Length: 308
Image (cartoon, rainbow, N blue to C red; front, side, top):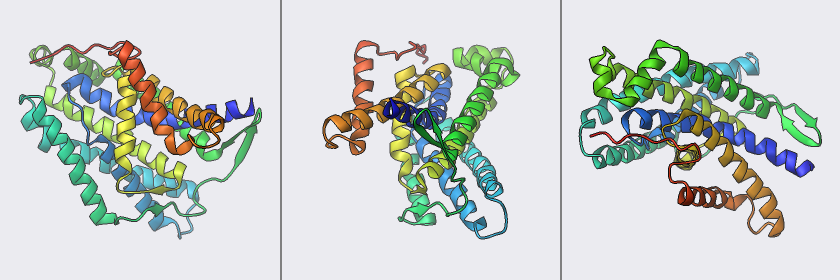
């Protein structure tokens, strides 16, 4: 029972991060029908910028919480600006092009961001400075949960709740939902479609920045290539839950985190460690393929109308 609860906690923490990144994928796809494969690299930039600020302030007399907040508060606008730049330069000119063109462009932007990050921060792993993160650990029914894990769960929950309110209750949210139904009709009704699409990229990039800082805090390091696998898993989570559906992205992210955690824990024990944490990606993608074979639209069945 202790092992079950521990894997449950680990899976929920990991799944919360996947859900934040997956929301960026699903928001863009729901409005444009575009898979922004550069979104994982935006997450990486958020982690690297946040960690650079935290490292620069680590030796000051500022409290650890203030240093973390400073890193996060700088990473968010940097990623928002990057998301707006990507949309304006790379995707907007290709909005009416064949679907393959923006897809190739997205992959190209991803590679460019990786190489720019490598030039700025180098190829080596960047470790999280010691003494910044809270080190408290708590025993809950036999499972150990750290202060960092609690912070990730709380921040993720608040952000997901706030995003849901934004989409469902605000004027921008109504414009986003109208644009996702039909860009042409929304434009005729007075919606500034370009502004809505840009706002979607900005919001998604802001979520990616938060996720990037949380990932670097959770694992204690960051790397210029970290966005590739994280982005791929988050995209898989969005597909698993139902691409284009915000609730599906949240559900898919949590499920993917739980699948990895329980797969690495229980299957690793059954195989004597042969199929352990090093093979956790296999478990997640195996379940994803299985679900899509029987339910191609994802668990929540979101269907996006094909638009010319």
